[in-house]
Image 1 (cartoon, rainbow, N blue to C red):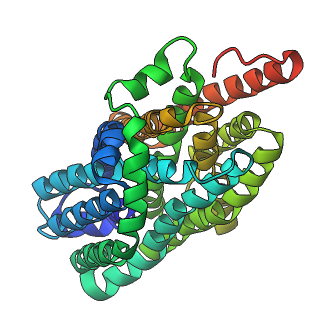
Image 2: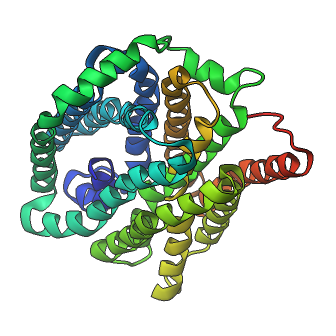
Length: 381
């Protein structure tokens, strides 16, 4: 919710601060760029502090980031994005490690998909609540309320710390903490190269849509509240259908489902290139639905694929590498979108570029899953 509040309110913030709304892509890029870096240190942080204490620290950093935005200066937005990125990075791999050791292998796609519903749920809250709160409290009051919520949550999870952190610190003693290990697992021969490439590409499409689509809709004549509802609609579908996708993936395999999702989000990006003021609301919501059913549903299944068949002590590195590549895509996608839009003067080329970026790994995933089915081989995890 914290990471998407500024993108949802970008047009209002721009009107009061004079900061061009299209620069929101760079704001998101800063968040996910630093998130991609800090995700790599998750194994070390888990080994030192444990999962609950680590989550409390991330929530406190998020509160500090949101509070800094209230000063309404360009520097504050840059600093706030950096702090928020540092908080965001370890969250997914840390929660993945906590769950992986307690989840049977045949249920992992469903359980990780359930965990990942928190992401679109938070985004849906940003889309629905932030415009309403901004109308009542102003956008600065809104970010301060989110800061207070984060501090409250940090206190609420304290009762679980003693039990879960004691267990997780003991379990973490055998894991590797090399910063390069997650990247080595993804990029070396025999590693998870296709998982890493797919995570990068799908993350670029997912987070670009979150960062820029509400602003695009406002520019073609939608109200701020209406654009927030469109984003929330996609995110709510992501909450509901992640569990369904996860159940299907547990039955037929994670890789073909990821390939189908990649084609869906790419098709939606290609279609978004042609969205305009003449589009009826049903078409815009239909486009949002395709994004929601794909771009907001893939991550839990991607995590299950990343940790499939590996030793327990390697799960932190595998999940950190996969999430790091996702955040690297989240950095690249919005920045590429804003840069392409600034150069061409319109968003069409940017959406077409995103569509192409998602298509390539989707086709590779489907090809590899077909080869694995027909020949019984798995040439490149």
